[in-house]
Image (tube, rainbow, N blue to C red; front, side, top):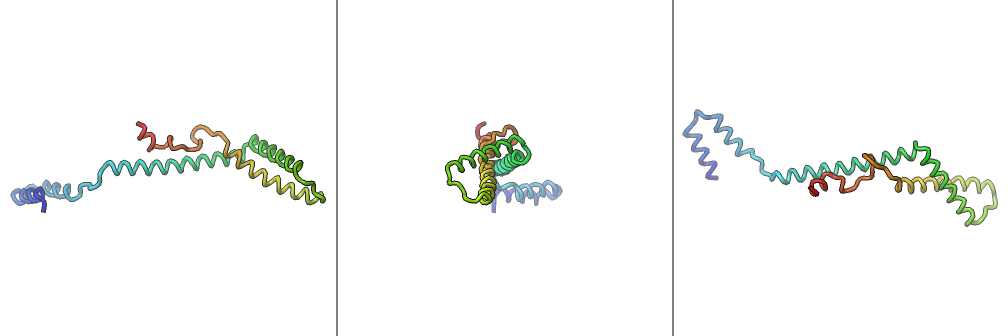
Length: 147
């Protein structure tokens, strides 16, 4: 087999009194890491970066959902924009014959418009700090590469 292994085995045969030392040399050779440490570090940093990205994405989504449900200014702005769009659509569109149908359809249209406006404002909302939308420059991998 290997010359180094043979030399260690010969040493083992000549010095049986050093049994623990000989076992240590055997196990060090047998269980020594066979992968490159750089690959392990690279894989670890890549894994942490992926997890970091998805955690930041989730935090941003939670902040946007908070604004959608609990922020009064946001909800008022959504209602104002939705009613403005509905009025513009009514001015541009044909008038309805039946008032009940008009009220019912305008409520449905208003609900749809509110959902659209909410999504539009949520995309354009500016959140800073720990809840901001993640970018690749914020990830550990990019920070290590920049160093």
